[in-house]
Amino acid sequence: MNSAAANFGRVAVLFGGTSFEREISLLSGQAVLAALQEAGVDAEAFDPAERNICDVKHYDRAFIVLHGRGGEDGTIQGALELLNVSYTGSGVLASALGMDKTRTKQLWLGCGLPTPEYVRLTANTNFSQVVSDLGLPIMVKPAHEGSSIGMRKVESVNDLQPAYEFAAQYDSEIIAERWVTGREYTVVILGDKALPVIRLQPHQSHGFYDFDAKYKANDTQYLCPCGLSADDEQKLQALALAAFEAVGASGWGRIDAMQDEQGSFWLLEVNTVPGMTDHSLVPMAARAAGLDFQALVLAILAQTLR
Image (tube, rainbow, N blue to C red):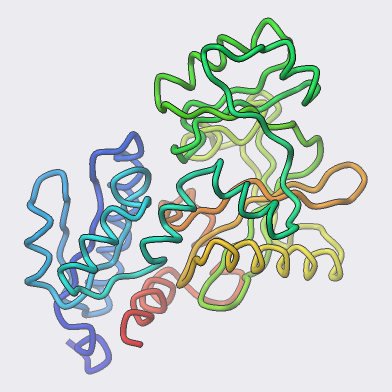
């Protein structure tokens, strides 16, 4: 082990877990684990679905690569705080807020940051009124899921209730969000800097950047340089940093946004433990900034030394 790697001590790479995003977390975690081990770090796999989380107290620090509920929502972060184990990424509050799309939007709106109008849905909602308020199309989302799980684009009033019922299979809180027609972007945050912006261009057969477009399709285009003017890219990066800081996020993460046909930017959501698979956006943005995958994971882990 080289001297730099030795500074980290024994590292638990937390991945897997019990959320609907377990499959992606396993892929992300294996990639992070391999990179750390290749760098000489004494890193070991730790799946909270298979081991008692209290066993983490035998490690010096934890690299969290758990996506979704139970790992990205403040739960694991709180356990690690109680166990006095340093960990990567955002703390308890920011993790909980970031996993809750409704509260994130409420916070951003309270801070004067642009995010599309939304309505919370229940079984008793007047769906025709929602369409009247938000217009069509509408995006329906579970409030506490990531990776586009449970999401549907609604293009007629008759499709709204079925979309709600589909999303309700994954969560008890569902939102309908005004559709933004335009281009989709993502901004990766590393430390206190926004990395080069990536434009996401799924094939038209997907309708939007859904689960298949993110993790399975080979026809999704990722553009970096993103095609924005230098001024617009800087504007979006500054907006992403403001949105990240507003929820109290830290360390690393990702902000997803849209630019409408009039050129205005709209914040969609924050990801406090983004994917780290071969299709993932964080490694892509890091490469554009001159960091290979190993350098990226070491930079994230190094934040636990402060």
